[in-house]
Amino acid sequence: PIKEKKIKSAVEVARTYSTLLADYKLRRRLTHAHDSKEFAHFFELEVHRIFTEQRNDMNVLKNDPMEDDANDKWCFGMDFIKDCKRRLPHYLSDYTDGLDSCASVQKILSTTFFLYFAIIMPCIAFGVLHHYLTDGIIDVRKVILSQAFGGLVFAVFGGQPLIIIQTTVPIAIYTKVIYTISKNYEVDFHSFFALTGLWNSLFLMMYAFTGCSKLMKYCTRSTEEIFGLFISIAFAFDAIKYLVAEFSEDFCFIEGGHCNAPKALVALILMLGTVFVGCEIYNFRYSPYLTGTKRVFVADYALPTAVLIMAFVGSYLFRDVEMATFTDDKPDTMFNVPPLRDLSVGMVVGSMGLGFALSVLIFMDQNIASSMVNSPRNRLRKGTSYHLDLGVVAAINAVLSVCGMPWVHATLPLSPLHVRALADIEEHMDLGHLKEIVVYVRETRLTTVVSHILIALSLLMIPSPLNFIPIPVLYGLFLFLAISALSDFQLWERMLLIFTEQNAYPPTHYIRKVPQRFVHFFTFIQLFQLAILCAFSFSGSPYIKMLFPVLLALMMPIRKCVIPKLISSRYLDCLDGHA
Image 1 (tube, rainbow, N blue to C red):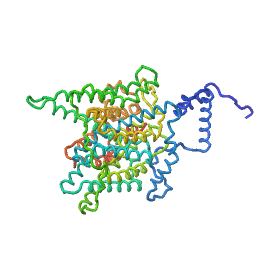
Image 2 (tube, one colour):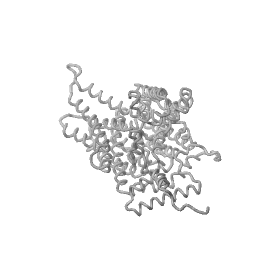
Image 3 (cartoon, helix red, strand yellow):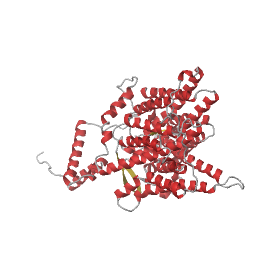
Image 4 (cartoon, rainbow, N blue to C red):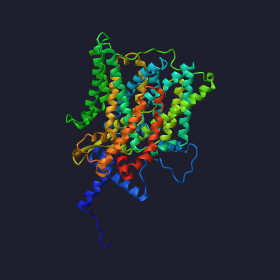
């Protein structure tokens, strides 16, 4: 052209800067700029990045490589190798991310202490449970050692460092079944336990090297949230069950019976006190006091502060009331390498069946937790590693099986809470309703590595001072974790809509696009599935509880084949998507 426009109008300049500032990563870098030159430099880098991507027609990093490439021929171990290649370039940055500013270092430090208390307390509780179920063969020491070894190995060699692995109540149930069978058939427990665990690890390795985790592309947000909400209910159920047992044993409901009312009342105070103090400190970030940075700093230490305060209240202020603490029967040896050759053919076949059922449970739990961590809402940048993580968990459980220690796998709700603890969150106002959006997550291994080193050192604090923590405080922590995880579940949000006035509905995407009757209908379908899981899991028979992973796996074909016949696909895309 004869005349070329050299400058932009004010509207065009404003539109350009608005487009640039829409990028959450650029906004975060600009807030950490020290001077105007660095501020302008960040803008130049962003413009150069956009220009380079447009010129080379590049796409940003894919977050979910679950779909097969049509040009790739399948071979054994292909997906495992792809995961290794995807995560290996980011390995060094997994240790350096989050060390770029004082605020990030503080986040890592607070998350490390959060993980330590959120892991060590359940370890003590699960140790007490294993001690009861196995007549002391597996105790608190072994559970803590299992957690320290498994967690540290996974933190170093696992693909996704934000995943937290831990032993769980279903694992304890399987251990109880193995103990019962070995006792009834007069078989050595350690040998039967080890062989079951080795079969489980073999099946998990097969899943990892044959690409079975790709089946999780059929696991939608619906299934993830049903399972996540079930875990929260299970935590709350265990806490309430303990409290009911305390009142049944120590409170004088029947005249002339055993009466120790102060013990039951103090247990109630300590449990609810842990929840109250934890929630109040956690919600301090939304208060008008202090500055925003200081409020976040205080809220980040909600869990350890609540545990320490209520442990002091229970062990000192109520020192005249004898509260339950875990017992420590120090074993002669921590490692019991079993003689596997002494098992009969029938026991080998039986252990293979138990190992397969256990592998289905760990496969589902591991991949659902991984899927929730790698959700697009969390804006992770380094890619997924489903098969690599499953293979590492299989190797860890093989070692734990031989050593006679409880198995571990990715756990909820701790893994998503770990992501949230490392995240920067922005509050956006939408039609008068406030919603939180994750803008940046520090994808670091430091929090899991350091916290599990501290857990290993905790073995030196048994029995004292760990036995100063009353058992009710442990169950109060379970309640706190269950409550703090609810805000991430859309299912919980839609459950509350059932009892909410229609004029007060939030302007979420599914409210705008889906008729109200279909929103509630889909919610009731999910609640029915949740009720079935709870019915089987909370039944008295451990053999019925073993059907839990099968029911969980069946929810994927139900979601893909049955529910679309009841609700239109365009409505399901809104209700069951990650928007």
